[in-house]
Length: 139
Image 1 (cartoon, one colour):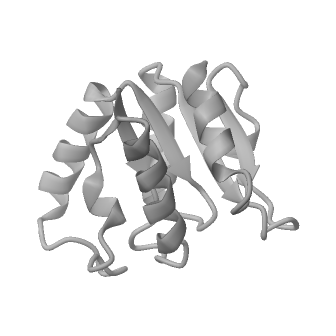
Image 2 (cartoon, helix red, strand yellow):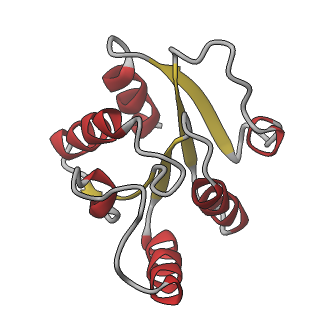
C-alpha cells in the first residue's frame, strides 16, 4: 500500500522520534511511504531547499497517488492541515494520530468536526501506537 505520511516540518519537529517510529511500523508491515523525507532527522523546521511551487506540486501528486493518508497531528501545522483537507476532498481514507501526552490539547475543529467516515482520530502512546496503526490498516 502507498501511504502519504504527513507530519509537521516548519511548524516544529518536536515529534520527529514518533514520525520515525510510525515510519518503521509502516515499513514493518511492508508498506511504501511516499513522503520518506518527513522521517529524515536532518530535515529541520527550515524545511527543504526546493522552491515552494515544486514542493506543492510534488506533494499534491503524492497525495493523489497514495492509497491512504496517515497524519501525525500533535504539532499544529498549516501544511498538515492542508494535506488532510486535500485528502478529504479527494476521498482518501485518513488516520490522524495525536500523542496521548497532550490530554488537554484541543484539536482544530476543522479536523475534529469532520465526519468519521472521512477521517479517524486516535490518541496514541508508546504502548498502543503499533496496534492503532495495524488495526486501521486492516480496515
